Image (cartoon, rainbow, N blue to C red; front, top):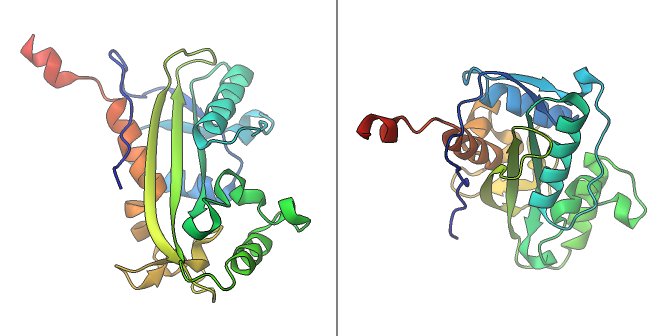
Length: 220
């Protein structure tokens, strides 16, 4: 599978100012904090600034991430970073996809990790193909009306196992098995997950795209 790369625009500088993180998801906030801890970014969760949850009405990760970033930036007047992510299972036509966080609720169940996992395993009953991937799309906006957002994507391939394993992570992690490691994501130490996950990949690409083009400046 061809890897997605961040789209870089000229003149973007490193983020040395305050940036609002458009998420209230506790698991995501922990991972962002761990991954960005050494990047020198003053990242403030939107909840600390009184920002309400944005609507996510779109059918693609990138559109939902853009909507969340614009909403947070418009309410705070700050640059914003947003993440939209989920699990895509091949035998289910890419579901739960953008509906990963509310997969069970779409079928009359609760909006919880446990209910979502139960719905996933039920949907895969009798399916031989258990392959799928996590995807994370990150968006950075300098302002709410930024016409050229920086966008990065990361993907992490694995397989779905019926029995949950491990107690770390969140979401579908107890059922998402990484063959090369012989473990589910929930069995990985947080530092290991945060070094190789879909979100870590996307963040590295985003941060790289936001660095000043010092090499080009040196040549001029």
